[in-house]
Image (cartoon, rainbow over all chains, first blue to last red; front, side, top):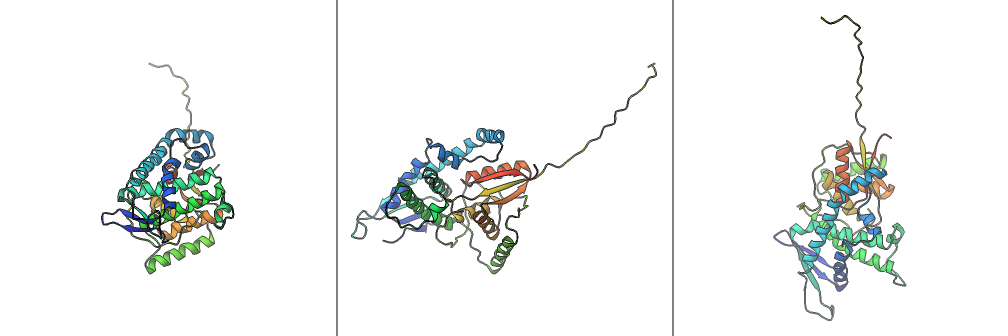
Length: 224
Length: 96
């Protein structure tokens, strides 16, 4: 069975091809993972406190969380809408349940990135997955709920990684960029936790459109 | 005509002190993709790939990295944006 593929449409959208039923199953779980009735453990991960000061954190909940809730709800709506466009090819010996594909309009890609990430985090929180869990080889003798969750996270990672590569502007392409990159890495070895002092960050919107050129990164890796 | 009297002169002085800067910190978590962290740092802070990658690796290796330092209000905005991408981010004053 071939792995899923992603192709760019002329209108800026993308199409996921060759999705197996396993991918479909996990994608259909995304809206539920992002619903409003999330368990506390999921909410705590998706909406973490910004400081160790209780008063500041309470203000944060009051002022900032509604916006963050809206972003997740918006991403969930996008997922629900796009999943309706699922189409299947005829079943074959190789794929008795058919091979599925679905299209994501360009304007929906940031929402999908957010939904895939939030869904993976929700699964991780629900099953209390830690660093060791995520570094285990996927060779389970008994399939527990926890291990099943890890498989789902990896399936979602695959799709998320393809979207990131489609959106990202890395890795460095020119010799100057490579040299600059290596300098950063060397500097990191000397003093890895230096604070950047830039005071003029570019604006960005997680639900906005990113139109950076292609990238070519490795397979999904966790953690970040 | 006012009576002559004693005029008290109160001496005042003003000291100004710059507000201490705040650090915006991204923390490691076992689920978030490394490439996603790098992409978010590029988008939010305008960092080139090398700088964003280097910061992401610091998060990965050391559990946290200071990704920005500056006044409190912009720091709050940065943390809010990082949270909107579901990164584990906090802020702390550089002076207690």
